[in-house]
Length: 285
Picture (cartoon, rainbow, N blue to C red):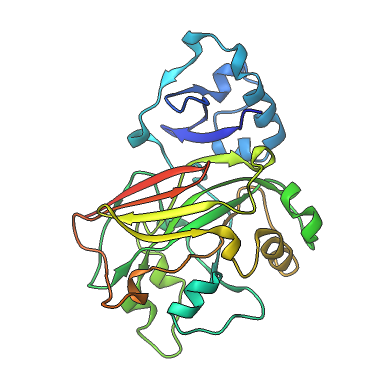
């Protein structure tokens, strides 16, 4: 089965072909039945997936060559951006944390969203990288059970939770949200892949390279709280809305956890790849 890969170019909602080298404009290909507005499309995710299933019948002239450098954030205006800290066993060990009893949740702010191939403006001397699997909510809900969690998601994508460690740990106790919300510090993409077509959605390979050197490499089954657990926990407290973004945690190998520590420098290129979901490429300036 082909996957629906939903992205955004020039502010317009698109579907990326299986070949990953071209795309169609959703509003034009649907004859106006679906809008060009990305957030409105996510609210009609089942219709987007139905349209994606018909891509095989599209004419060559319906497609536009895909330039990954021109991809916008696929979720430009989420109501809420959640993130889960210390959610990989190996990462908890490298940071000298015990395993949490419940998900450790903080927020990132919408103004920190970045393009999949966007630049990162470094501030200070301790900006860090954190590769993450990101879940995108596709259906509103409260008190969602773990058994129903996947049906409330639109898809998964790749994320980078960039962190200003100096700001994060400037006080005691530390605060997370501002240190992780500087300009461009929430990169996601390159597109959203429909969860229903991902047979391995519970265990994906994730790799992060900084200027060509592998820094993080894991399988997502090292998570302490899996995605259904996170959805159930969050929705038991907050209402989740279509288009909400959930960063699900980073594996071991972050700059602050290494000996010696390795923080980002100007000119560094961070490439984050997750199996079947694509690659982010962000350049530090």
